[in-house]
Image 1 (cartoon, rainbow, N blue to C red):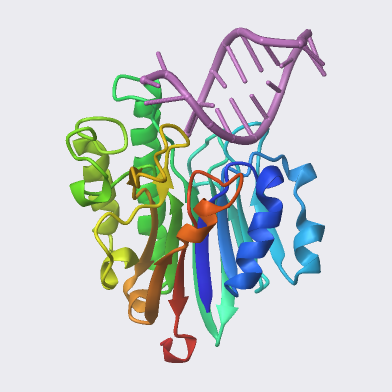
Image 2: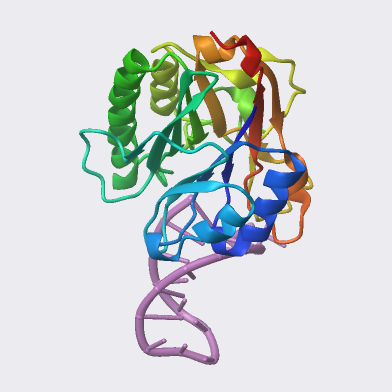
Amino acid sequence: MNIATWNVNSLKIRFDQVIDFLLKNNIDILCLQETKIIDDNFPHEEFSKFGYQSYFYGQKTYNGVAIISRYKAIEVTYGIKNYIDEQKRVVSITVNVNNFDLRIICVYCPNGQSLESDKFKYKMEWFSHLTTFIHNELSNYNHLIVLGDYNIAPSDDDVYDKDIWQNTILVSKDERKSFANLISLGLNDLFNKFYQPPKSFTWWDYRNYSFVKNNGLRIDHILASNDINAICESFNINIEMRKKERPSDHAPVSIRLKLDKIS
DNA sequence: ATGTCATTGCATCAATGA
């Protein structure tokens, strides 16, 4: 089973690339962020032509998340439970595979803009509510994956230049502490399960020839409970999608699970 | 280089967010 996450920066612009990615990589479940499309305009019929169900939570202009799945959801949750947020950043589904419930939580964390910004306060508050939500979800689901654009580079290894990326948004102590705290609930960053080449990133700024210089950050993550960690057999950053004409500024990130080993 | 890209409003570009 192949599961992926991708900040597409407008589903309208990137729809054909999404289909291409799904089919070429035999993706079963794909989490999307920054769909930037209202629910009335979501192309669920187009996805269904390719055999996928869509679960979406969008708004005008900004944010917007969706899960594209070959498995029909037996449960869908919109947003973070017990947190009123007008920004559409989280959608979750439960699917039943081999008689096990698999919980998929698609997240688009706030960017925060700068450490002095009110948006940074929102980012930290939002992350705290996310952490409470995941804590609760982990007590209900043994097979759980939280994946998406976290807008946090967890360590200095996750930035192309640690002197430039120091005490700024996306790398600050507070953000890294929040991320580590989320992990400590009982999650595994699946990136760390396998050997990865140095300077592996998932996002490159559109400006300054960042991609050709590999001036990137690793801010898109797939976090999973121990039971999922145990059956994960590969982790990949699908960098080829970033090389395409008119790409998203993020590359998709994907994992493969060995379902016959699920327990 | 604050160097790109996508969206919106009311526009044939400026403002905004990332």
